[in-house]
Image 1 (cartoon, protein in one colour):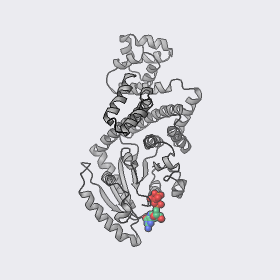
Image 2: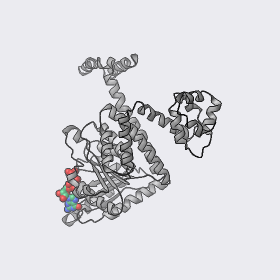
Image 3: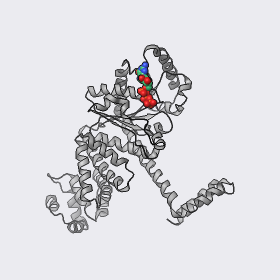
Image 4: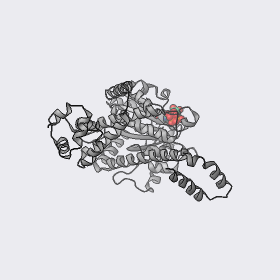
Length: 420
Ligand SMILES: Nc1nc2c(ncn2[C@@H]2O[C@H](COP(=O)(O)OP(=O)(O)OP(=O)(O)O)[C@@H](O)[C@H]2O)c(=O)[nH]1
């Protein structure tokens, strides 16, 4: 029996029966076919209920992984109505062809809190992910996009910089996307960042895509959707992705887990004005750029630069191949911006060649997965009936000092486990 023959028979029972026969099963899996790639083969297998069988019978090579990945996709795809399937197909096709409207709609889908839409978003993401992997292979393993985090206190000159920098990149043939992470928008309902009016010229540029921060959800939710938006932008052919955050709160720490390079923009201001900058965040920076280094501000900009050069020397090195740099730039005169881009590319190159970039991205994937698990497990725990009914009483007893927090946590965990 050869594979093309098998695939011509879409009958699921036929496949099921075949999977129950180990001998045939092996022949089926390994039979080389000049016409069909393993992806097609897996897809056919997946339509069979004998999937679990197939999983352990496959050798532990790339095929197994592909199969597992598609299992998840299959679970999500199950029961997709024709209309939903059409929507996913339309968004996918439009997105990979570089249509901005489809990219925007796809990001809106991943930002949705509606459970069905979230499922559709996952189906779409898996397709885009598979596409990105293929493209990466064609690109000889080089990542499709350079992911850059950009942060700085309010008024540091972020939007003025992005406008200048973005135009420079698009003129050089790059496609740039700017994604904003602004947790303040979660509470205020308004978006501080990513507001298109902040970057008027860039927002009209067809090779740039600016996405304001989602205005709903927790920081965890916003970072999840930003991570997913990065993948979608990569699928859409954007080769530079800037993730912008405002330098307050936890968002920049979250962003450092999403990007290849983290850049901190600091204004040439005194210590007081930089109070809002969390010390830890300076330690995360791969590049510190002192902004507004023009006119009367050149002198204070030089001073701040010297201060940060000394401060960074004291920090523990995070990379074996890169030492954080401190530079001065001006988005008004354009000074230092070309050099900044050169430094960024140098960073990307040394990280890529040394293998640190791949290791960093792998680690980020794991962090991302565990963050999602953490968020969902806590939600699951809180809403579990046995736990939910005990929380008010136990919290009250902890507050009054009648019960130690440790014991209260143990009791709740016990209740959770006992009815699980
Ligand atoms: N002299 C000078 N002024 C600048 C430069 N870049 C920005 N500014 C000014 O600094 C102020 C703040 O710039 P923005 O780009 O809005 O700063 P931001 O960091 O995006 O601010 P938020 O939107 O509050 O986060 C504006 O008045 C700009 O005109 C620069 O390179 N040189």
